[in-house]
Length: 86
Image (cartoon, rainbow, N blue to C red; front, side):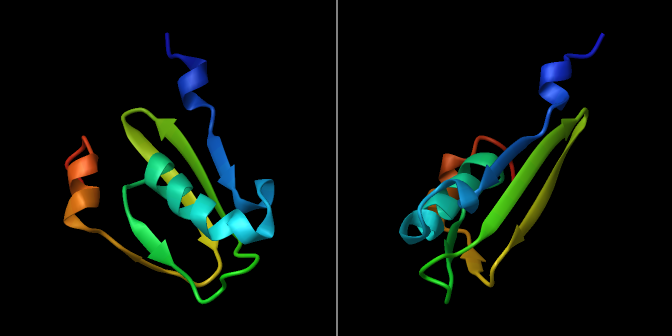
């Protein structure tokens, strides 16, 4: 029998925080829910983004939407991941 709680999607949305905090929240959210990365955006005030993540054993599915952004991986970010993502 499968654990139904594991199948429930988790949602991170910048709509849940004040406009001045959204980009910082977004970087934390995508690092926690998706992959340890850094990001910046030309939209500094009121940035909008949403990540919905679900486990469909044996794979995970992510839907990411948001304003324009530039993302990158650093050696520090790669070292923080316990999985073998490159």
